[in-house]
Length: 499
Image (cartoon, rainbow, N blue to C red):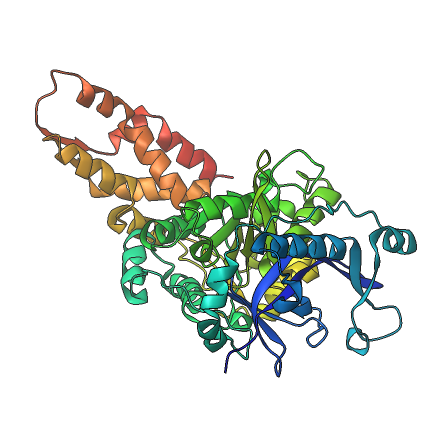
């Protein structure tokens, strides 16, 4: 039996406070409906939406309403009349605000109410910048929709699960092994991050989505792990500096700009973009006790991130001149935030490190409840921290760890210099005593593995100038501890150790 086609309106939550939850209509849905479960399958976007009146909980940021059989919009004239009728219908719907009243009890005690937007703003003392113009829907091929109506009926689902996107991703163990070659001394942390990411990619159930919170001292591998994932995982990933972001009305980027970058990184394939990875680094700079941001800007950015993290539909304006937009659903998006949180970790580690040659601190016993309390005390909003379910603290690095990284990591500046000079016919050697002293100096600088690369580059500056001279002949170059004296780095070690 043929299932009837419907038109419905997609509503998107815009405001939520202790008095109301406001939903505004965004566009028309055209497709089929499972009336028993009140799930609407949209044939335009190939997504499923719940009826808000049946699933009116605070976790839903979008849903359908006003479902009407499509036959009611047909006229005896032409399809153009049908399109015009639908456009007029949406324009009338957009003149209203739809909301749940939270003033007298639980939201589930109420049906979705509506009133003209002007009356709503006056009643609740809210200003809503909202466009009432009708959406262009003349690109919808209704003839084709009718032809495939029977097939559409088969695709109606009785749950909110969406169809999984086919992604070309490597086996998790292969990616794990590749990252471990470059980022050392963080094996379990890498495994935990990858497990959360793969769960998001391979499970269709959005309620099981993991949002990842990475923290640890400077230079221990936070950015390196994310860069390795970006280089090796064949899905779009965007890494943003959180300090560049502000709320609307302030100078800086908005959180929706990050979604646009992810969309373009996916070659404008919205389904692939929605299963990508969005990273906000330096998130600790957005705490309410920080010195670099005013409170309203920091809190506003974190609040803007909440909807992205929880899963919501964003209408992204791609081109202001043509008003080209795309809807971005973040329900399956992997969101990662990372930061050093050095002041917080310093308090935790005051009694954990003894001696100059101490090895890294094992932080795996720290439970998530303790982490949440510490982060809130640090100045991160509790409602923001509460949206994360995977916390990864990267290990601090001792001198022995630094030596292992310097000698064995494929991303080590030492190994990269050796490999590149070998390609030029020059054999570069570092004696063992110099290796030890480099690690001593790097440890004293307290900037993690980043210091290793800086010191190696500083030592080789003069040598590299000679190498790049046109008359340089293939030969063997051995660098020993005397190079430290020439660069006055040994004196630096003594001074820093005496502090």
